[in-house]
Length: 381
Image 1 (cartoon, rainbow, N blue to C red):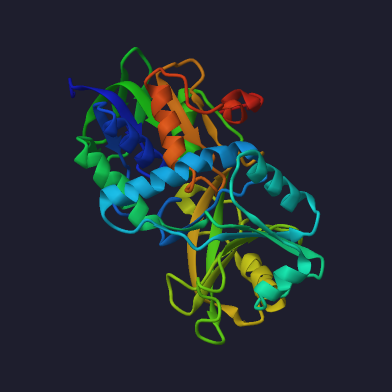
Image 2: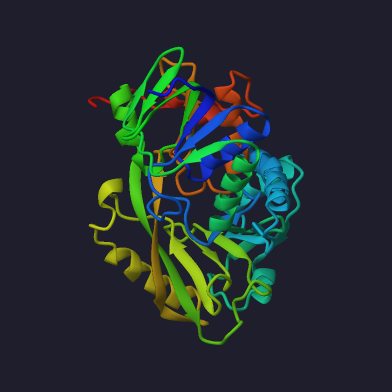
């Protein structure tokens, strides 16, 4: 048994756990980061080449958080010495005067963020490669863009170790014992920490159930789809920013032709429910069928057959807001879970507030919307 006691042990080296570990090590806390799989891996929610970042959100508390998150992304990029964030802008598309666009405008205005509103005619003129209903308008968020996901995760982990943190991969936590000092068991070693942060991703139910905690989490598999340009360069980042649309019955997000030249990333923000341990044993044909029709109808400059198919996993809460809170019954075990497919961009600030909670400090942001007790107790374990 290890007699060494860490200030904080972080369980899970996905983007949220790695961000928390980076924050803690940078402020001088003796920090251990444990990851169940050998790194790098593609079994969770933090792998891949790209994620969208933006300040535009219908909920103003996210827009507030993204001000600082954007600054930290740029700072991390400088520390690491390689590109993490590419500013391409972000496009929120929807019905003119509809709730989605109006809520985004309210949040951006309230927090002094830059944006441009494009009424329907201006929207069609600026983005002729898109064919949406005549009443569609858009918001251009100039602070949005592309996060290089794999490189961002590597930057967090490399800078964490540079600041003195210890990272152990291939170390699945099989048991967590509460106490003034928390004890964590892995197949090969035992570790101890004054505080613990759990960022379990889609394995949340597996690790929380033995602790007597059950949350209404839904784990879904996302089809990450790429569509070939009919004309090379027609949808690159100089012509099309990252984008999101949710007024035609289901949410869609996309990125310009960037990571795979000549192929545009357009995905359904939904997917079939899975268990994290059997993610590949599910039929997602309905997703691809729906997306074929969507691309054919709204992106005529793309071939309506996916050219590249990859996968990712979301862990969703009923309200699509994460849980960032102390574990019930423990003031030295902090949980970050249920990021519902939009947590990557927020990770610099999420990591900071998780670290603050682990150190017994008041977090820099209100966590009212992220409290664990907003969900009624779940029957059975």
